[in-house]
Length: 293
Image 1 (cartoon, rainbow, N blue to C red):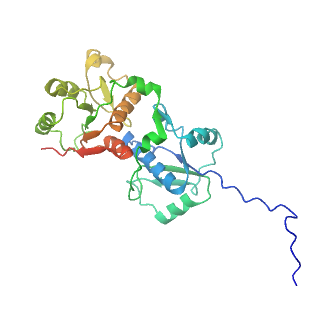
Image 2: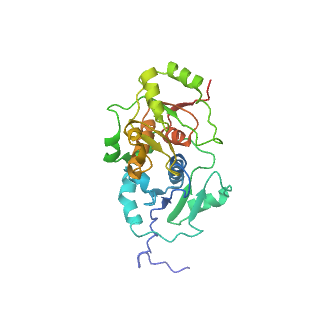
């Protein structure tokens, strides 16, 4: 007969404890505006939920971290330690790209990498393969506005109806719904307590005068990636000789203010723009795209 095994003579080796696994989100480099990049952060969170990882925002995404901070207890506890010097080197094995204007990724490889034991993965993204349902209140489950951003909000109560009119970048960037007839129809259709977000600041005064809408008091809006301006108003107009010196940090906070106004709205009407679409998507907002009359 087999000799009996003497139990408990030596402690069994401990099962390796399953450590935390992370996705470090890196903003897309080069010429991409906020809407694209923040949509990528949304993708990072959906992948993290799916593959049980914690999202840490790379310090490279400073313009986001100047306006928002992590609100999720796990990220608050674990990301600073990871980011403060425990990051592995970036390699082809631990880096993922999910970008809708680049080549389509191999989804099997993508899935295997995300499910692997590799503790830290770097992700540059602006999309997710076949976007799934977004859990409710996903943004505020993970982030909160910093006091600097909240201080800048130009209202006491969050506007319920927000309109985003996105003036095109130039001749070859056609966007529907910005002709005079469409704008007039929009002004007549929506309630007087509508709030306007736009990159063309002269529209603030037009919609306030004609339809009673409110708006921020920005003198100028400058594109987050390629520093284009769509005109000036207010004090900037009076000092037109210094129009081209602008405070990047102030512009950045103003931009996040506008995004936050959409993020916290009940209903958003918008011309085509990744800026508004990204806020709508993050928070599952009720929205309509303005296609024009």
